[in-house]
Image 1 (cartoon, helix red, strand yellow):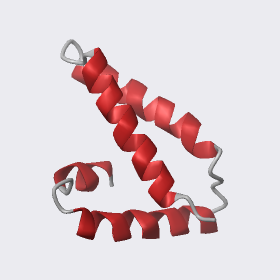
Image 2 (cartoon, one colour):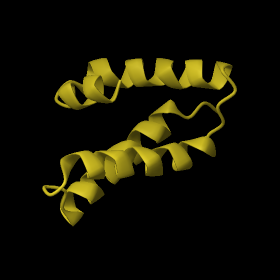
Image 3 (tube, helix red, strand yellow):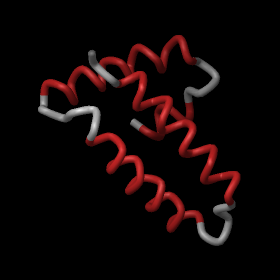
Image 4 (cartoon, helix red, strand yellow):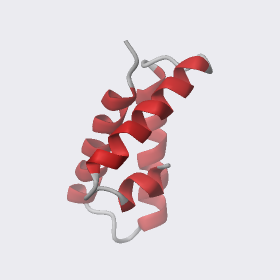
Amino acid sequence: MVKTVVEGLNNPQIIIPAVQQLGKRHSEYGVEYKHYKDFGNCLIECIEKELQPNFSIETKKAWQKLYNLLAEVMKIE
């Protein structure tokens, strides 16, 4: 899904509903919003390891911003 989101960043009208549906499914599996922070930290750490030595502070901030946005969109009230 991360690949789909990254490839679709220029088409939020398509990506946002897909991410909302993903959030709904996660909620049905018992995932709580508080779990997203831990997963996000692990995801960014994995991306950092994969992209070394080309992973800059700016890259990290961009990934964190994207992930935080996705987590908010996935959040089910």
